[in-house]
Image: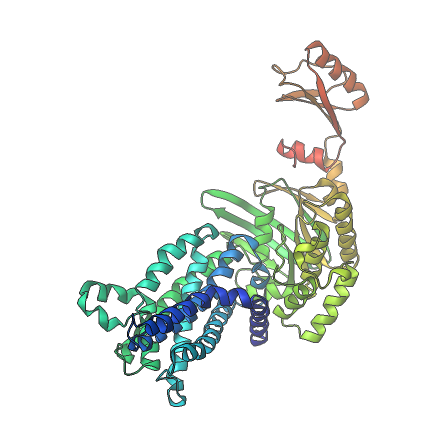
Amino acid sequence: MKLRIFGALLLRDAVVAKRDVAGIMIRTMLQPILFTFVFGYLLTHVGVIPRAYTTMIIPGIAGLSLTMASIWAVAMPLIADFGFTKEIEDRLLAPVPIELIAIEKLTAGILQGALTALFVLPLGRLIMGPIPGLSLQNLPLLALMVILSGGVFSAFGLFLGTAMQPQHISLMMQVIFAPMIMFGCTYYPWRSLDAFPFLKYAVLINPLVYVSEGLRAALTPSAPHMPLAAILGALVAITLLLLWAGMRGFRRRAIG
Amino acid sequence: MRTEIHISALRKNFGPVTALDGLDLDVGEGEMFGLLGPNGAGKTTTVGILTTRVRATSGEAVVAGKNVATEAVEVRARIGVVPQKPNPDLQLTVRENLLFHATYHGIPRPEATRRADALLERLDIADKANVKVQTLSGGQQQRMMIARALTHEPRVLFLDEPTVGLDPQARHGVWEILRELRAQGRTVVMTTHYMEEADQLCDRVAIIDKGKLLALDTPAALRSQAPGETIVDVTLDRPVDGEPPPLAGVTRAESRGPVLRAYAPSPAAAIPSLLAFAESGGYVVRDIHLSRPSLETLFISLTGRKLA
């Protein structure tokens, strides 16, 4: 019964997402596509940027797109639902533990992240040329990284979605997302921060760092990246922390 | 009559504010029960606790045989809720709102479809089935909210202020639906701050104010407890200076800002002396309002305040 209800909740989010497919793609993919085109194609053709740079940024860009898809898919509906539309109340009255409603949101976030990766990776291949790690034998590691990346950012979305008020959305973009993206090792590998020791260790609180480095390990294994064990350990630890905070927020907002 | 809802010593504090102050109530199976009180009386908090969305500070509440605090999932399976502020799923059509609601309660799709279509028909919004909810009028939206709450055939239906903000015609439409539910023998708990609504629809009415139960009985019995006098409110152009003097035909009079309130056995005898008093004081009479012995005058006598 619980499984059937979970399926119904997921189907509702799928139906709604399908209706907003253009909006979702613009929000999560336009910026990465532009970046891929300008840095991966335009500037390398002009000769301003060495060709090798493209392999450096494709994992970061893929990671950024999929994490943005996950975080948006979870945080934005929750901010609106708890803030003013109250649409979610009908689902909170479903005969299941309310934690299941939150888990469904997380699942929807991971799925949106994975779908985004399915779209962005072939596109990157198309614009930038061959991606070394995009092979069948590398698929398990790539799939694991995509799911863990979607998971950590869905959990982040759950936390933000229950902690933020609607009027804080633009502030959230400026204060949380902008620095997170800039210091997320998306456009440069973590190793390149060797010259800035303080920054190198300060960025380690940023989950996007592990997503970028993890996808680097999966997509461009020969490029410098953190050890896989460190990446996996950090992703799991940060996910658990954000899940704890997000679930706490969800219970607080769902039950008065 | 079996008890369908049992509330004992229910208390809820929001920080320093006490919303419910030790409420005791029982609602019988098949009863249409009204919670009557002004805004802030604790009606919505009571419904919130009974529908598992608000956690009580202390006390106990049992709905359809299940404890709202310890068996919330089982309670949710047995109740339907029409909230004060309509919360339809705006991303879905009217029909999808009902369909998805049914599937959230584990009802298989074919059965959900059958029920949704039947309810849309019964509540007279079948022609709106495939439109987005935003295009519905207030009355249609409220009918959809009631239809949605009924799709999983709950044992107990909660309606929080079901006719607030509706025009008179839409209000009577909702009343018709509620009368039908009552005839079907479903247990219904509704909150309202409209006396007429409680009076016309409910088997029993609890009058609550400041989180406390003030009176509980059938509307007829409550009316009989009301002071036998009519309340005549005379609204003047400015506040009355001091307390009004004794007036012919008036048992007792008091000034409340620009309103002169008089309790009188017969309004016909009281009104001339009230008008004479206004004229002698140089006041202009803006309005005269009569409240006959009713739940309203009972409420005023119990709380010293008007309902709305």
